Image 1 (tube, rainbow, N blue to C red):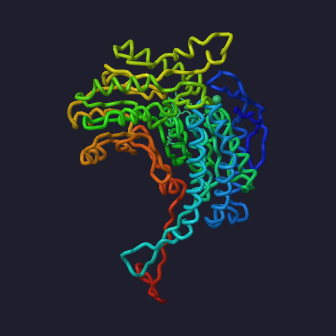
Image 2: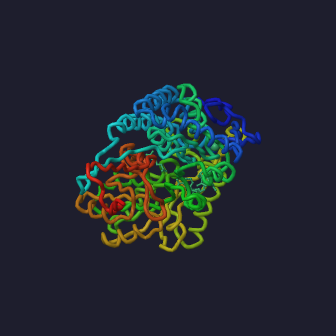
Image 3: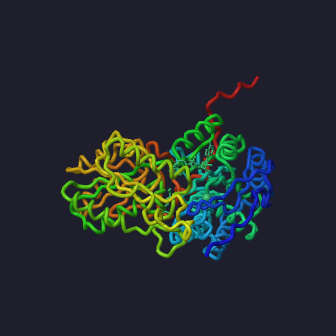
Length: 514
Ligand SMILES: NC(=O)C1=CN([C@@H]2O[C@H](COP(=O)(O)OP(=O)(O)OC[C@H]3O[C@@H](n4cnc5c(N)ncnc54)[C@H](O)[C@@H]3O)[C@@H](O)[C@H]2O)C=CC1
Ligand SMILES: N=C(N)NCCCC(=O)O
Ligand code: NA
């Protein structure tokens, strides 16, 4: 079942590289609280080496090996990586589940998405060649012009722990497809699968330095990457606070950033839905990935006419969620990622209670894990498990309504009119996602337009396809990943304008002949 945790080093210039300061960080399995291995911890010295390796890879052989090679050349590597991910799917899924606590079934699904993402951007890399030199239609026939799309250069990719490998690959695949070279800095809370991606790159013979992977702390490895003068762009997914720090340091160098930050997304349930179906999507929208999704629809707005019946069913279904070690058959909720995250989630619930909200269910350690006999199943007493919580009687000024919890916690309000629902839904500093559930599709259209968000789900919540743009508005950040937008993120647009007339330009008077 459980896979042995490989011991890896930093991946710089195609080589396993011991960190200059020889630091390591422990790897904790959040379901058992056990230390199951360690990862190398990079510091600014290693960032220097990785940036140098990436710059070299960008221009090696005049760029002909990578950045100026045809997209078809790069696509071959992306497909080879996809094939290896598929070959090693079960090992990778095991490592992912052990490292971040998500149920094994979810981790396996992520690995399919990872391979699919490499395949998808392989296709787009191939398509890129045909899109070069797109002609511009100019208003003067003495000129003609076209557009070149060129890789931005060396990119820094900083990623979170909720989808450790998938969030990295949403950035790695398009950046390599575009012809960039990259330095990936995964989250220190879950880096194992990203280090295995390094191993895969080695196995497929990716040219050295094209992808460098630095594990380590945000302040020690992420910050020097964000502020490095030879890193041309930073693409980040994570908390709004860290996104702000990254943008601040990038701003000093006028370095572009693309930020996918926090959210507090609404799910609006109208009174004409099939209740059981809507209940399940509401749960999936907030409790999938143990509630740790930036797009989680964690604010439920339910029509007052069905609220009692809906909440009654929602609580019953929620109490029925199988909470267990991620490796147990049928697990649908594992532990949150770390002790810090566990405490943070519990504090949100306690504060909500203190402020007068009603906890309809959950928000504590699961009973069945609390009462296990010490000498029989000691390990089950451990683990950062939180029972999924549903919280009602909230006001719009409470933290539980306003702040991203990043755990299995759903708060609820009722509404009576469509306008009121939209107003409540948009009452947030965030604007990542939103969902509307109704059998009236005209209403769904109206609400989709009215929601201030980059992603809207109709009659569902969370399904996410590589082909569709992903990203937010307001304080959820800017820029779009995935789809063709995900590739544009790594391309810089150059216009080439040519004067084609046989006549002189004729603006200045020719000097008179003496
Ligand atoms: N919306 C989202 O996708 C995510 C939200 N969060 C929220 O943020 C809270 C804090 O969790 P963290 O893991 O600390 O998230 P974080 O946003 O600080 O971490 C994300 C990545 O940024 C790196 N990082 C941290 N500080 C940095 C800095 N100064 N410069 C450059 N890189 C830096 C981290 O090492 C990690 O790779 C969580 O409790 C959760 O509520 C966390 C992860 C993802
Ligand atoms: N894999 C799916 N469906 N969604 C990923 C959402 C990742 C995020 O938190 O940004
Ligand atoms: Na971990």
